[in-house]
Length: 429
Image 1 (cartoon, rainbow, N blue to C red):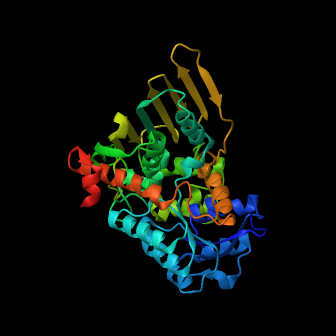
Image 2: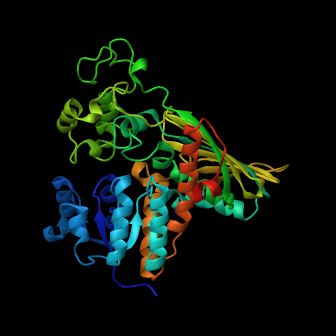
Image 3: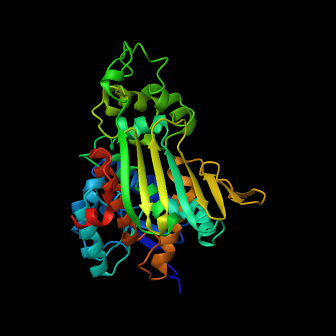
């Protein structure tokens, strides 16, 4: 029996994910979702919360702690702050009686992931982690196909995350996720989505991992002759450099203000992007720095080899050096194989000895924030779960912790030069 009133949400962290991705479900389905409170350290973000969602001023708080000292204000709290803040806020929110929608990753520290898992079980409240790829038509169709046994027993999975050169430069060279100690290692911050999907597709536990990778290119020694410290400071390489900040944020067809408008990525630089305000941010802020002269340290490419139960072997590659943001996957089995490209949103099924079957999953949103429809799919799922009184979600903290163990063990392997790591032994440390 579904409730007749919308599920209420409070947002802790009104950035691109909290306010521009998840909150917009209310605009599509106000009968299901109502934002009633929010917190952010940036006054302009609270202004956006008030103006776009009619949240009263007295329900807009200048910090997470201020909001969390109040009595419970909503059914669900969205936690979309920086990686290392998540668990402290989540534990406090569970104590207040909130169900949680928690941005990934849970935490870069395994002990914090386990502490939240324990607390969620004790509180008997829903903790849904934002592994939005499970809610896309692409991966849902692929998982269902595999579970039906369309290609027999799964033997191998090969997956690639194509980050895109401009997205990598934005988020992982100039942006918030450029330094591991301040946020999370790349394999967790960007690719715990992929670890989660691989675990889901395999349908078995991951037993061992081995990983290689490095920050190879975005370093001072690779700066071309004449490169300036900032792109707008008379850089001699500006015309030929694809990483030029003016190109990425103003003129690039996939990311520039003139093509994609005021949303991501320009909304990360300033809350209300205009050419004037974006240029000013490039002159004075971190997003105008030369990609070879930043303070970044996360890897720009990484490969993980995995062994799962039932003798399934898996490879995953994350690379910065691609034109577009998309994911590709190929699964082989004893009776056939299936492959697909998430951007194309098609699966190609080959049953041995039979004609190819093309499964067209339809068009998806062009907005990057949509994650192939996964953001809105997840919000619909969460609203329906809450309305029905459920607590065990498709991407509950129980499922999510497995992907975090995989990612953290992979990073430990990479740092150790590719050592093979048993996940059981790693978890027990």
